Image (cartoon, rainbow, N blue to C red; front, side):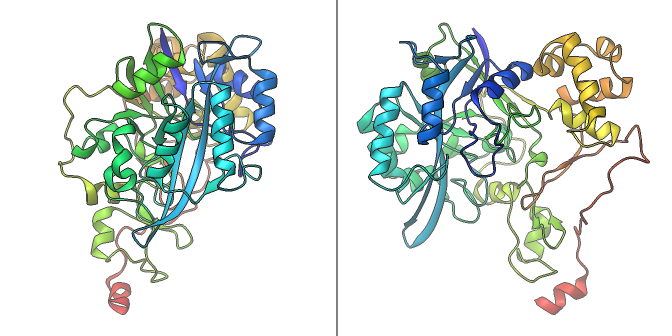
Length: 425
């Protein structure tokens, strides 16, 4: 059974998330997107846990289902903030659980370390190795996946508080961590450059804070399971047997792909940052070093290296992003929704449109230029100006309505004036 899954999402009880992020909307938009499996998100939060139990039924498969039979896997994200070897660490992990009884035991364990009711993604002062060890005592079927591993602030390899290796993070428990999540600012090719990750499976999920189709499922993992149950899902994540590949956004689209300072409107490539000794030429403070920079620091293989027997992946942007860029309109506007709905009603889910429908058929429903971009998107041939320091990347296309197109609000200063550097250095 071929399934596109997004196993890293949140509920309305997580900070900075849509207040309409409930089970009904998650199912509705997952179907529109073309997802075949969602994570529940936030299973430790008391109010969300009640909604999970109210709206989802559990059976021996370990996969919960709505009344209309849409499947969910029990999932949450935990933030660990602690000191390790005199250095402050801030790491996010995705947790998968086999059943509600195990979820209850995980919750009881976390309550011995703090509160769970203030946020869907609660924070605990637990080292990552101890966290894995204690969860494995509860059940060997719990899976811990380091989330968006390159994100500067909360990734395992993040430039601000991360580690230089998985072994450094998980110590003697590293052998029980079987997969890593790429995060929006990286893709499998970037991770292949680290030999330490060769035996780890690569998964991609959205970390969505809303149900809109440009958020949910924007990154996903493709599974091919002989039998659709938690046991086979876990086997695929741990061994790669049943994991067919991933769907990624172009890494440049991510909010932390390049280096920079959002407040100073400064974005730089890793090479340019190094020339500036990683300091901002405007405010003279340290730049927020992005994923591309951090990969260069830790990689022991050249750019372009391909891991033998690596899983394939698609690199593409959400359909709404393409239509929005071409029309010069925000993704939530009626103009964008009109074209989106035309395509979806004619050709099926968004993933059907992005992955399967021909350019000729697409052109019957929308402007030929949009149809052309959808095909280029499928082929990974679109150009994206990199995101940096919390600012999403931008698709670079010629708008169909140039007079209505949004003005560029950020300034890209790839080469600061030498006098600025001289004053500082």
